[in-house]
Length: 343
Image (cartoon, rainbow, N blue to C red; front, side, top):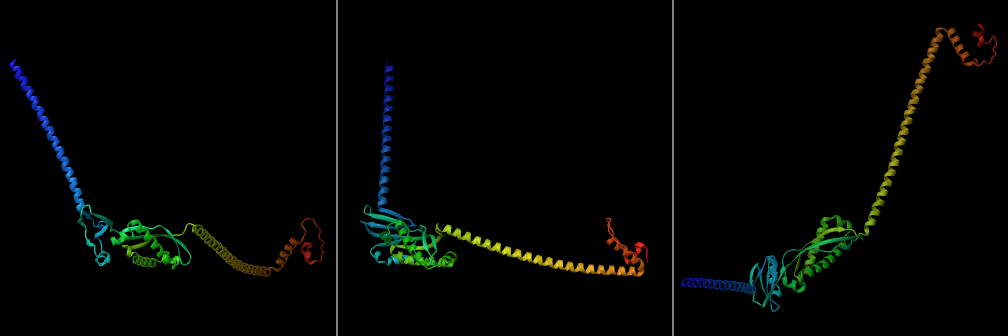
């Protein structure tokens, strides 16, 4: 009995120990979770706090630091030495800390704020617009411009955004292009590459003089495509059709003229050949007649009486009737001497 009681006490003690160990494990795990959460909160708070003390500037950016909405510092990148010196000597930067180079920068937390602008080359593809050349030809030009921000303060004050700058560039560029093209004939604008390049370079220089107060610099202007207005297509096709019809009529006229010439030459050659053939035939015939006469003479000289008899028989054959008709001949006629046997 005592043994059983001791055994029950032992099991109860073990059970209590297990419960206490489980409680300790739960408490320890809870403390670990709380510690982890607290650590994460501290790290997040530290990160937020560090972000309030520091900011980074990339090589592809300009950065403007404000304090109570007043510019106190400007960081620029990818500018030439001349462009950087121009900013340093600018009156606007007299009381502003100007620096260059990317990296980690310091600011006063919750007081300073930073605004960034790209310093990379920006390509703006303008809308196609209609222009009129000096010879009153209408053309559709599709241009593009490459530009970048060289003065972030002036850009912020005047433009404030990339879209505003693009719209301003398009208006000025179209005005300059329209002015230059208005003094140029259409053929030169389309065919003379050197002239077009010089014109675009001149336009870029003039635009830079106008856009300098905006903190913008034009790097390049290009004409992507030159088209004719759609309403001109039918006129062009009609003109091309008329030109081809004129060429066809000209070819047919020249063909008929050439055919007549060939025909005339052929007829002339045929007449010459025929005349030569007739002449040759007459010569041959004359020679034959002469040979025949010679043969007759020779035959007559050989036996004149037989020749006379033969010729008379041929005359009878040609003149005496063959159909039973009657002919009266006197007996003493020379013609009838062989018929009647007279000499």
